[in-house]
Figure 1 (cartoon, rainbow, N blue to C red):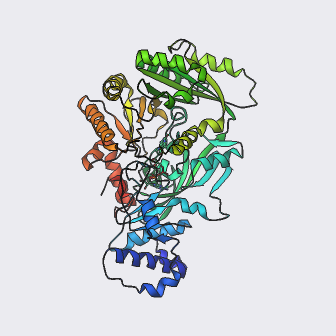
Figure 2: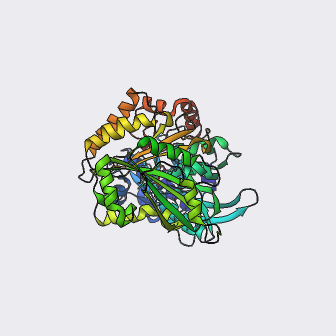
Figure 3: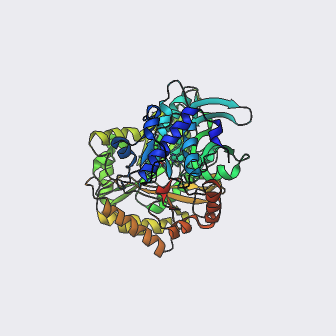
Length: 522
Ligand code: FAD
């Protein structure tokens, strides 16, 4: 264990003593230091206990859990995080700590009861200290070193200025690098490039022992693989070295409509199996007959909305395959012919293919436009009882019938997007903590409900009904962004990875300090 106190300037020691005083007083014990002697040095801007800071740290995007920490650290350097975690680790009564990225979890995963939340985005507030650095490594090629607190939209903007871009994305870009790498980071690019966790070369992590460690597949590999998809259990990611490639400039964006799920899924699987020259992105979603036309009309040309509506009335559920191929302004091929070739022989409803052109940026940042619209209608800041799952390909037809048709459609209730698209396991690394089902192809299903009337519990009950049904009928799903699990359920979730997960926990966070909001070890 490194003794950080010998390396610290006296102002930092005072800062740490201040934190300890706060926490000891919080725990109702006698304060051993005289806080008034320290008060001139108390950096209130860093360790805040005011109502506003505590309130901000006790909610997330889900708007379901409300868990108050004792304090919130607003770090201005990585050292602040090192010092906080080593203070906890070396204390006889360690306090719990969680990194909070953008707090876009659903169920309190970045919250800490009676502990300290580290508001990671404050690392970004330090003036003249850009924490995105783009360079060419002689072995790896183009890379970006980015702070764990950086938003993906900022990484995109910075890299595009150099004509470069990360290759793997999430649908929504206002999430932090540390937050998505703690889960997996998936989207329609995953089948081709792997999840975001497969596109990282190196990390800096402040472990639960308060040690700042650089790790990669060659250097401290146990920590590297533990942290990727590790649900914040091993430490706080303060830097990630991310793979970059030349950025495309424009995209062909195509939607195909089906009413037969079997044709839809079989075409999706065909499209993700084309090698190099195929699509760069593939997703898909459901449109229900009871959904308001406003929830899907913007996806199609205005002149086609009516005929899609009547197809929907007739078939009750439509499946919309969404595909994108990237191009550059410099390409000389005929893009229309190129993209048409990909869809030849597919089984979509004849005539129900819709193509459009977009810039690469507009395509990647597509959810932002929806967010701004929902915000303006007061519909963004509502509870989000989401359920995200990976379903084995072998059971996806059963899942469609039992869940989409028999449960969700029968409820006849409006909701947010319902995503269903296949992806491939060959770009996932077994050594990482992230968990996926067996089989080369599995489906990503996202039931992204918005409880506009505030009644999240009925959606939550439906989610439980779906999980129970999968258990009863032997559909071996893996939850993504899991929440609300008992210890036994976590053990089942991790399956053969559980033993390694526990071993790594004992190695990097033996005092069980990190991210208690995931409810795995606490
Ligand atoms: P937070 O919610 O703040 O934190 C999540 C977890 O990671 C917590 O346990 C926290 O303690 C830990 N953590 C946070 N920062 C760090 C760090 N630096 N080091 C270590 N641990 C840390 N996910 C996808 O994969 N694909 C999508 O397309 C997608 N779309 C989304 C769209 C929306 C609108 C929303 C709200 C979420 C979406 N997500 C998606 C889910 C998202 O990836 C996760 O919720 C992610 O955790 C959010 O990142 P965050 O920065 O808000 O993390």
